[in-house]
Length: 351
Image (cartoon, rainbow, N blue to C red; front, side):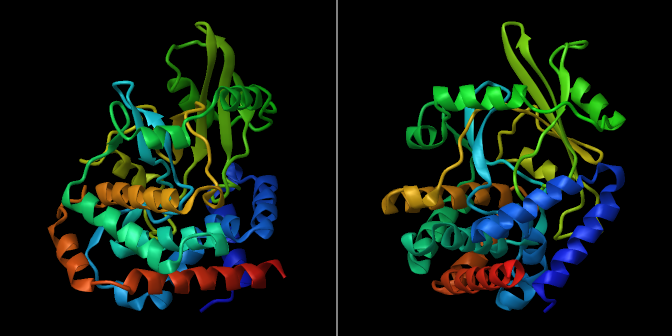
């Protein structure tokens, strides 16, 4: 297995070469700074390492049926959006690394991320497995999206932005620094995503997330479009770390799968991902949640991932058979190994 320092250099060099003028060195440096602070940020920023080490860490999972997969299926990759009907929806909201993969790998990364994020104060590996496999079994048997229009109010309460969150969000967006690099393709994509041609917007640079830092990210925003603020974001896309020879942005097709109700503003256009920015949801800290709520949330996350998996051409039958065959214990064992490897890599890399 390649040492983490070399693996990091190789990926960063690949990213720099792949993006060309859309590579942002200062943002990559900021990513490294965030990753040094905590193991969970390190996990979020090293999905490429997961793709590289998964076959060695989880060899027993390689033969499982392949399905459309999130790949970067950590506990921070879920949020709220509005669908074409204006209904509030919760679920996986980032498909940057999505690709076809054996179905268990998404659950392993989800479980490992829960162990790393919450540390000793979180659920045990066995409790994490029980919650995730329970939710996944329900979701793969009856896949459907989490529409919060009439039910599942607890998810709305957990994730919905407060009035102060909304005020802080728009204050931050409208104060973003003017873009020094006005990539023509980005500007065209942003203007094409506006609800009205010719809207008077400012083009700004935005630094957000962890894993995608280093990729150019521009925002078109205004404080006053028909009575209120408006923002669109364009982000540079690269091929999935799970399928580096593939095309950039192709995984976003999974957001429109049979059992999803997508954000109509989320689109991958060539090597640019465009979306509407709005203060729909807030980030959660698993450590702040009571144990029963952590388990409930993990169950919901796994159920939603099942909806992505079930959207493949082969359907869910092969997955259900493989899930039943595996019994118990395998997920806790695999997640513990991946979490431990992540912690070792983090400590070795940060020095």
